[in-house]
Image (cartoon, rainbow, N blue to C red; front, side, top):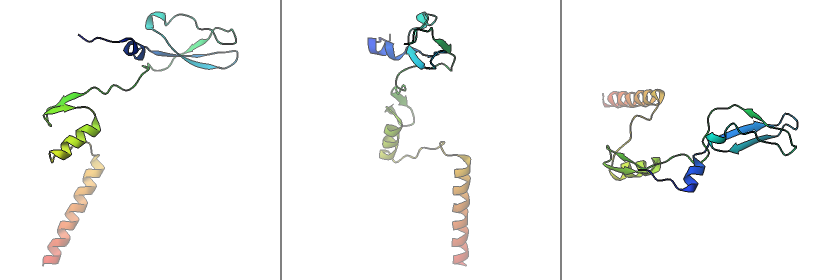
Length: 120
């Protein structure tokens, strides 16, 4: 069972955006979904209008460690994965774009042809 501390709960609360029609002030307010319909008041005394945006979670990006079957151990993040792969002499594949792979193949074949011509 996952246990959350008070700081974890705060980090999981959504951020709501509000704008005052009188003074134009924009505010981001963090509150529970239970209190999402509660009115918010601007510093000038006017009720704020909610600005509907995409759903956002306040807090840091989740970077949980996970088991990587290719490396055979737990990996904390991308840098750690690269360090482990380098230590084991492995090369990560699958992250290159098709253009990069095509360009590398064309260059490699051109060098091979040059070597063949030089050997004739």
